[in-house]
Length: 326
Image 1: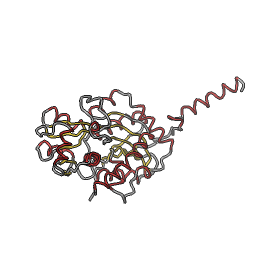
Image 2: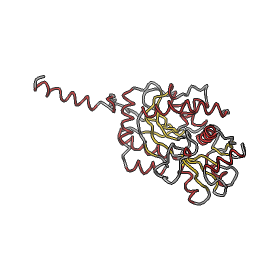
Image 3: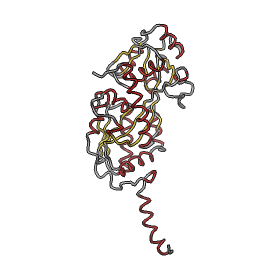
Image 4: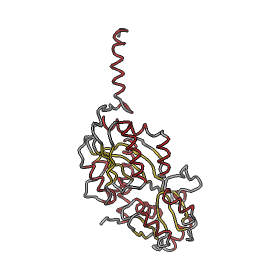
């Protein structure tokens, strides 16, 4: 190639480079060309809602279109997820949801809501450390004591949740399954009601996010026995992982963004790359920490891997526990 021809090709190469996302995927410079709906399948005011509103503000600043929060609670998150599954694949609607995305196929088998087949992954957004918590006045001082009592008195220990099929219900069911325990599940109308029941001594334990439980632990109403991640979390290094006594027990809660099936790859590339660019912002780290989450903003491949691992896991656990949503 002559020097003159090389110089003439530089602008073309530069323009092509500007249109490439992570991994070489082309980015659509025209998306979004209208407001984008970000469906949150839970009520306003909770931790995931706060994360969603922060992301919506930052995405508007970077992409030049409003990202409108649409809270659609109900049916364990399936109502909001269904709304996005049925939306046109034009980049106008996405869902920001929790790890319930992986359990919905087993809880609602006839609904056609398997995210591996019915949705386009955009990004794994955050991990949400979950804790096994007991009433501070109980005699359950640590995980080994709880295991011993549960094995000596099958069916007598209870765990509460915010409803059948909720993330804290499934965390408890998985704990019983992996540890080989007979625990009794008690369902309440929402996680807050389950926590209140714990402090009142109506139930023995709950599985809840650390941000929900730490104020009560610090006030002396509850005792945090362990986290449900594979290892200890950096924010609570003194708290053991339950897996230290129950090998193989991991019950992650997480947040993720997905869209309808058939989204253009260029749209996915621009959206996921923009989300990844937010990871290092101080306001993102601070807001995520306040919500008890660890920011990931890790892109579609990370979410796809998480779903491939967890959808079959919850199918096995839900079938073994006989969990049915009425």
